[in-house]
Length: 428
Image (cartoon, rainbow, N blue to C red):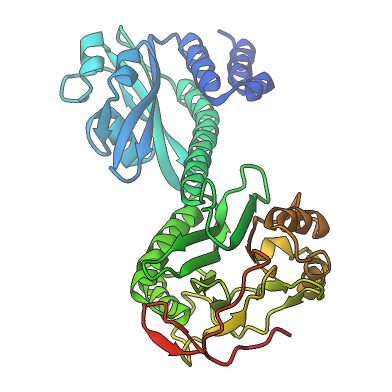
């Protein structure tokens, strides 16, 4: 073949695997089409994609042509073993002109009778994320052009694999977050509850969460929090933090004490993550809320015939940012009949280019004492959070009107004992 024809043939082969139309295919179809094309262009008999399972340090058969049994059997090969393992370990092309039994560990490859192999690594940045290889049933000397073409295909396969991995993470994060957010809030005597979670971006998954649970003493635990970041990693940390706080709530009579224990846990086991949380305990008579904030924005209190206002709640440091300089604090707030406590994450009130005070004022202005569902709906509309820039969660706890507060000067401790009714901190 003349040099000019050789160049044209090389260009044709490269165009066949960089065709823009391939980008319109779903990931599984794209992998299948790329393998079909590379088998045809290289006059090969088999082609396969092996992707790295980072936790197991193994290559997993993911897509194949002529070696479909590898995928069907879920073939796994440790990095460093066999032909594919060698490609991953050496991080460069590997050519076997004559395959022997000592070169491969895949029983499917051996049974197929592959005589020659060419493999190249798949990269994501500097990390090897898999291997792409082709084989022939007859002896073959792969050329430098063959290697270059397979590397071009590997780039396309790497992009598809990263999309596949990202979508898998998103699906796992969605499933995890949905399993951790209450599917429905409990029906509790004397209270009206409602909540919303709105993702802030496509497939938006993050660390925002809320929780409501009854304690053995009859007190009610109410939590809202936010783990920094987005995606599966944040959702996993959120799940751990949520479970830990539930455990501490069972042994702590005071929200500040529970958050102190949670802070120790986050600093030790979730180092590097920043978490804010608001934990409130509502007494069995529904007259008092004892609340502590770890870096979380203060709730809005809406009472009948009064403008809504931010509670005068001391804000202690977030969880996981270093040892606090002083003990965490709890504040007691009176919950009058018909009053609602509106808890939220910063995605509800923060906007780019605006002071957060403006967002807090919007929330305060659009909040009135009303059924909890109405408050939630109005908060999303009034703050512009129906399409938020960040994940947004809101949890409303309203005391039903008509109930009478306990006239006694003593109330039950969250742990079941008695204590004098404390001087409450008045909302600002």
